[in-house]
Length: 287
Length: 139
Length: 136
Image (tube, rainbow over all chains, first blue to last red):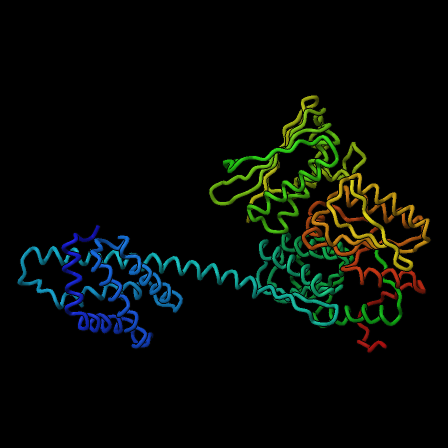
């Protein structure tokens, strides 16, 4: 508990009496720390909102940040730090938005000539402000973590596009290092796209994959076998020279899987298979 | 090897007839869906349960299945215990080899099921029945 | 015990498995199909497993048997509609569905059968570097 009920009342009084001056000073302090990266209008609105909700909480005799009547204040703080986190401000810059209130308050409290009770008040006020600062810190950290998790997910989405490139042909251009989790996502998405589009051919292009290890090769091979079970054929394209060497030296058996030098060659191959099939009406035999 | 506390009430299903294998599949699927296993993991677990339930019926002469939700603090999972009082397995290594069968099947039941789950534990001896515990964790 | 219905469409028998089959149901289907192939003189069988959420080794083995039996009775079998999760699981299980032809859906399966019963010329699979020619 940061404040006593009396202290809470006195701080509410102070915030009410010098409201406009405190908000202005508070806003100026924050504004200088953010060096113009946030519009003055938006900043003023945020500080005004903070001031209002803080005052509202104190008017109801809130004795700490986690008091029941301070729920609105906590919401405003959380929203502020969430916004700061998403806009790319640092944790310090976010916390200063709250701590700047201390300086603004100090202008209206005569500390030098005052007695111990004024000192006690000031210490109590700053205690509350510290709590507020800590909450912004915590919310900021959480928001950043969410941001990182979201981005990781987006990256997974981004890095594994499965596209239909021709009638009956879908392609997945793999880019970057493939770990097990990603390989699994690619595998599932590719197979689902085959079903959704009714495409009997899939091209797995690994031009953008820097290295292949046994596990990744296994995932690709399993995808090919699974696609076959579903009635679709896979073509692997873009195997780089050093990857071909790795595959051979690891003793990975590609068997009768069709491999092509480039995505274009693979597409040509898939089209020829389809073209010949429709033109000559002869079957593609399977073991 | 099989750490983690049971969560909720385990659900039992006895296996004495063909149709009980279907019931085991449905029970396992319900639990797997409830703890939000991915679609592929659900499919793998139900398939493994189907193999093992059939083994319990065909080789163990029937038995009991217990399905429970487990939690190891970080993830949740489904644990299934298959127990029978049948003849047991004399040579476990051989029984776990792909393609080995005494029942005229494909010989993929035991070895295949082991590949479909995250944890696989088997206790057996000739004449003392068989108890297999498998667990699949959510990702 | 449920029984899986077998429909005749032209020269093809169509089986759409809609229920979680007991082992006995699967074996019954195998018997029924053999009878119907002989009775109707059909040359193609399509088994649609779109609704199956798992295929275990028993069902897999039954599908292989059906394909082999049909072959002896001069009918081609195509299994269609396998779900991705089922295919991934089968690969992990180590089941390769030996001797079974597959297609993505019933339509593709019909095409595959039609081509199989066509002129029967082997496809020249020379693949490589030919130019991409427009095919009529």
